[in-house]
Length: 72
Image (cartoon, rainbow, N blue to C red; front, side, top):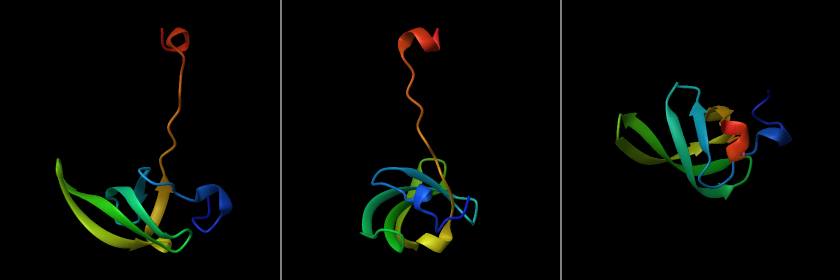
């Protein structure tokens, strides 16, 4: 999926995978489709807050909600 596409617009607190392979959490949207502030996982449990650009995002994690009956 194209990172510039409408379907891949990250939302606040959504997890993304950066092109560097690191996982990040969007904590502020500076300009949708252009720039964000993200907590980037440096090591397990160690994060660094940085500005990232939309072109740096490889994919957006999508949460899937299940009912308790579906999970059983």
